Amino acid sequence: MELKFSDITPSFGVELSEDYQLTHFGDNEITWLKQLAAERGVVVVRDQAMDAQSQAEFGRRLGNLFKSPMSKKDVPEELIPIFAGPKSKAVAGAGWHSDVSSEAITPGLSMLRMEVVPASGGDTLFADMYRAFETLSPSMQAFLKQLSARHDPKGHYLYLSGAKKLEELPSAVHPVVRTHPLTDRNALFVNAGFVGQIQELSPRESEALLSMLYDHIAYSVSIQCRIQWAPNTVVFWDNRVVQHHAAFDYFPEVRRGYRLTVVGEAPFLNDKN
Ligand code: SIN
Image 1: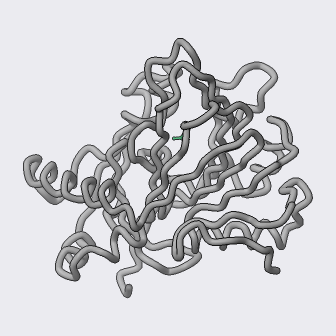
Image 2: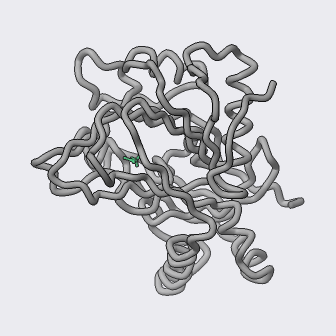
């Protein structure tokens, strides 16, 4: 099973190049989509005839979905509203992060579908955590493979939306380098949106190391890509190996869409890698 796509950069991000409708995908195409996202991080699909119901139905075919009590009455409970308008002072996701990494069982794919976009701006930036790890020195890679990090729910959509208090949501400890089960490749797995501290280091050491790693992610433009949205664009990203950052540069215009997020697995490091 091979669908046609074009590369966004030589190694990161692809856009399906034909007029594929996700709602017509069979099981083979779904398996292929998951593998493609695992290998290339980000998959863009344009012009999707989809509403909130059909997005949720499609999402359920990708796996178990995180639930969102923030959804309105007529919106499926798996969809997280993504909205900014004339009264928005800030938006969720405006900083490098991977989705809800404070969960013990962290996400696999996220799927964001945009309905209304500003005349310009409102792009989402993505960064490749395979390459973030691989472009560090061998000595740093070896050091990071011994470490784990505590991820706190400070960036959790249920906390940011006011649906839950911080203390009602759990923290989790995950390896700083994780292996993707579908590619067996290692990726850097710390993000500024959620990580509190590296467990094996003092607070000062942890802060210095995290700050170096976050700079490495933010400044390494050759491991990033940037997606410009149009109405009915759908983007999938694999949170195991990708971080993203929503650009909030379009105030006071409206940007509206829905995200769903698939439950993945507890992050692990294959120590043979
Ligand atoms: C998110 O962090 O999931 C939101 C991304 C976006 O709005 O572009």
